[in-house]
Amino acid sequence: MEANTVEKGAEKRRKINYKLVRRMMRGTGVHFVLAAVSLVIAVVSAYVIPVITSFTIDYALLPYAEEGYEAGSNGIPQAVLGWVESIGGSEFIVKHLWLMGIALLLATAVNALATFLRRTHIAFAGEGISKNIRDDLYEHLSLLPFDYHKHVSTGDLVQRCTSDVDTVRRFIQNELLEIIRTVLMVASAAIIMLRIDPQLTLWSVILMPFLTASSFIYFKAVKNSFEKADEAEGRLSAALQENLTGVRVVRAFGQQRRELDNFTEKNADFRKKNLRVNDLMAYYWAASDSFGYLQILLSLCVGVLFTIKGRISVGELLVFTSYTAMLTWPVRQLGRILADLGKASVSLGRIDEIMSAPVEKEPGLALTPEIRGEIEFKNVGFRYEDSTEPVLKGVSFTAKPGETVAILGSTGSGKSTLVQLLQRLYTVTEGEILIDGVNINDIEHSHLRRSIGIVLQEPFLYSRTIMENIRIVEPEADEERVYEAARIAAIHNVVTGFEKGYDTVVGERGVTLSGGQKQRVAIARMLMQNAPIIILDDSMSAVDTETDAAIREALSGRRDFCTTFIISHRITTLATADKIIVLEHGRLVQQGTHDELIEQDGLYRRIARIQNMLEEEIKSEEGGEV
Image 1 (cartoon, rainbow, N blue to C red):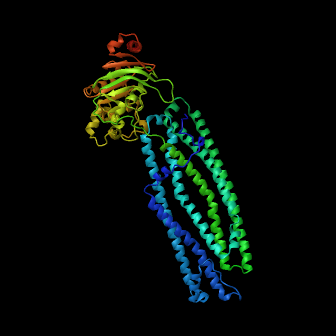
Image 2 (cartoon, rainbow, N blue to C red):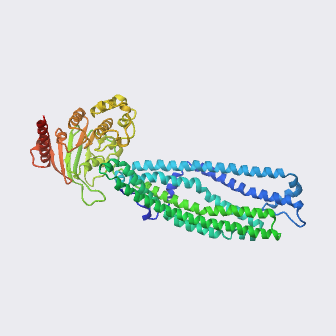
Image 3 (cartoon, rainbow, N blue to C red):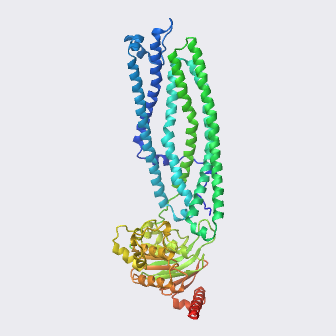
């Protein structure tokens, strides 16, 4: 049951669509600015804490140190050091250590508050962006042409609208500001460390280029691997969705084992590709940990040597050790940031593939004329874009307002395509279709479709109550209108027989109802539309002949203001139509009334005779049993 997916990302190189990025960030600018300001404050306060600690240690040790010991600058500006000396220097610090404690508490509190605000605002921004993406995706999918949805996998679309959106959200919330934080931390630490001792600074960052290089190598490798894993997840989601949707088909043909094997194969492929991503992560973290700890050890050893030689103070050694650790881990995290950036760019590319798909356009004037139901097909031909063979060829007929037109044809003769052209789900490739004298391409498509009610052979019902399903096209409609539509569709008595009546909740696709009941609920829903044109696309195939006749009899009361198209293989359904057209291999080969066609040699008479013979055999068998 594998379906086609949207164009595979592995087959082409995706580029970030910055226009899409700007669009999805609308309304989140204030949160990003506040998060960035909070980030700067958090970084500054984080670097102030080691400075305060080292300064306190140096000035507290000064009165007790050997002669010649000097407190280091600890990267503090000379103006501040001069002010400290003016109020008493080390003696003042020793006597008022509590002030340094308060300074540390304040710096820590500021850091905590700024971190909280940063995470809060970036979370608001991330959730806002993911909401924007989901809203835009849903709107765009609803505007895409019918043909697009026929050629994509629902499971893959769901995965792109959920998992890929969540990947983008996680990157924004967890990693976007981390890039800025890493740059700020490296720049701030470098400035302070260079002010203390340039040579020790060099020793403290000597392994950083290797750590940075390994991050970029990891990024390139993991991006490709994640792209493959993401595509594998899409195929897995598609397989799961299709099996859940077609569960009755699977069980009916006893294909559970085969479908399980199919799912297991895709699951194993996803696991394999995901493990490849995890392996790369394991290699990177092992290497980066080694470089990180080695850098801290190197900085500490050289720093201790410089302290022994009197080149730097104990406080300055503490500053270097703290800053080296603070520098190493953000640079180490660069690999994870880049990896998540790769994942986010892949997900954003998959989202962009949907958003870049062209929406359904108005080919003509987008008029909104009053539609009465006069329809004319003039030499209409149609060919699908991916096919060289035409589905319809030279089809011409007319339908007057209030007429019932029945359509008969073998499988693949173009019956459903004909009514899809009438809805302009596809655009005719030859000839033209006129509705009340207006070319169908010049009628605004939403106005056209509101004027055409359709019931398919396998109607879709929402997982809601029967009442909500029937008045889905007009949620505020009063209950009497619903009951009247249900009576015409011959479903009212059935529904009232349920324990909860119209409040009965039907399952997804209406699985708690029989096939005939689902069709009748769908007919009632269509009747609520009060459309001047009705299409019944084999939509009474699951009801018995008596119910079929009752529905047609009830519908006949609407024929004065409603043009009806009925597609069916049941001659009794077609016989009462004002006009019957017969399609074979995409061509209209017969048209007329039942009485006219029954006299002509052709498909209609052959099918009528076969069905009459079957009915007679059934009656004779029933008579024999009696």
